[in-house]
View 1: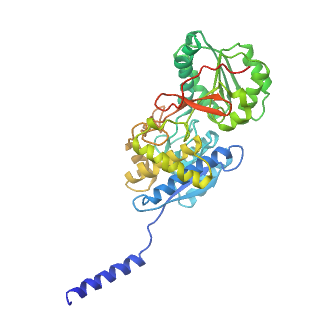
View 2 (view 1 turned 45 degrees about the vertical axis):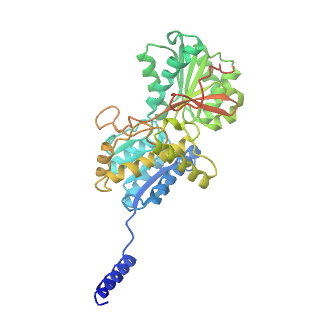
View 3 (view 1 turned 60 degrees about the vertical axis):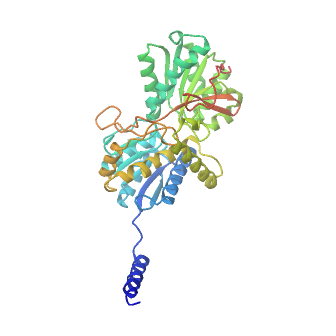
Length: 415
């Protein structure tokens, strides 16, 4: 019994110490998304995806035993981004997630680099202007250039044969908003058209805040294109499509991209007039064939969507899945490999991490381009897909095959 007393005393001391020790210091991460304003719909979805990623990581013990705590700031427009970054930096938060909108992402990235903060873009596709790309600025989502190139490749390589036309015979037109988002995506399309020596008969830029859809479509119609590529937001994308139908624009095919043509609201507003249109963008929970994912990513997709549905009443949209996958990449793959939570150490870890394509639940992998190059900070393993509106209020992923949920249907757009 005498031998047991010291052990009992030690056990009591250990229990007391465990009860009185301080909880682990949280990993504080800023989250700047448009939760109001014109981009609020997608911004809220993307932020909710980030929040589910934090909850699932914390349920598994956090980052090295430290819980992830999100410091949320509403950034409804571009002008608010620098102030949001400064406010977070003043609070000691120098790891920042964002931002859904390309017009917000660019000034946010520039401000973050200026404060020595790390900026981790989860969803926006426009160019992240300014210093720090690949050094302290990273993008998990596909670039606008990738989406633009992907749209033209799809039409030329997959759709043209189904239309019975060689790609070289097709006349292409571009209509794009004249901001950082429009430029990034349209530049990718222009580069692909140029590389393939395909004919561009019209290239129309317009201000989405002040434009006449009838004049934009009339200018396009005058060039007599066979294929129209549109880079638009939801309101102007719908207006332009309605005007195409009103003017009986005779297209063989039309393809758009994120922020309009891929969104469920786009199909709901247009009904039959959306059928036959394509979109080059990111997948959502039900717009990706899970067979194309690694087994652990497939299981994670199911867990994440269940948690998202419980919290929000519906499955993850493309924006929500991008937010979840981008945040998961940071919380689960990068932060545990960093020597500390200092931005430079996290950035170094990001450049070291490799996840195969299909390793994230949105089909992406992880490999960031190093600083100094044209793609600095871009995720070289980001996934994109081609959506098609196959019926009224029904869209399917039709390309690439590993993620497709339906076959490509050569449906000529209504006119």
